[in-house]
Image (cartoon, rainbow, N blue to C red; front, side):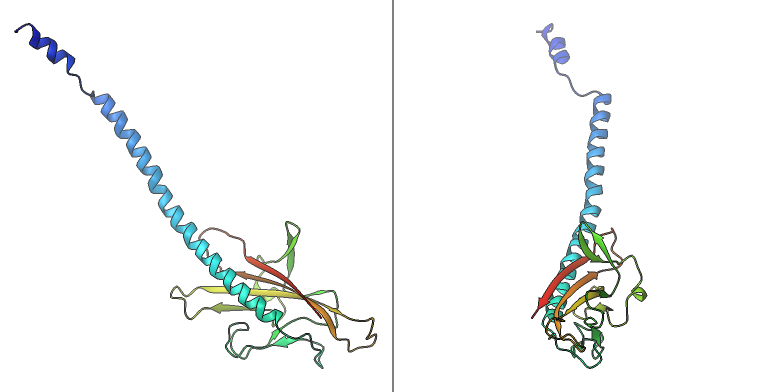
Length: 199
């Protein structure tokens, strides 16, 4: 019995100090990697929420513009107002919807091509837009106080076949609308909607 005790002690092995240090380092690297994902996911979630609200706002805005009549005005310019101050901010402000005296020409904010589609150029300041083709909107119902940069350009086409002399009624209107939330923590593309309205 005395001879078997030392053999039992030799067979009971444990981790060495080196193995414990290696295991600890592996666990720390894993925890650090996971911890770095948390702030990134929070930022992406916030930006996705902002993009979603910007898209909802852009859809409401383009629908309001699309519903405006193609009627001719004595000045030749087409405009609208929104008494609620949402589709045209602030309330009572006059927003423009194209210039039939320049048919086929984009009027409003600068447009650039992105993947074959026209988008509003948000790299330019708002001052690069013509008056009445942009505004900044802060949603009073949003507790975060998010501000949206809203810009658009309009291409009007007139019917010269039946009305060769001015004033010619507008036959169609193409609206390119961009909505962007400035100050996002990671760069994202603005929301761009493009709609054609015809008689």
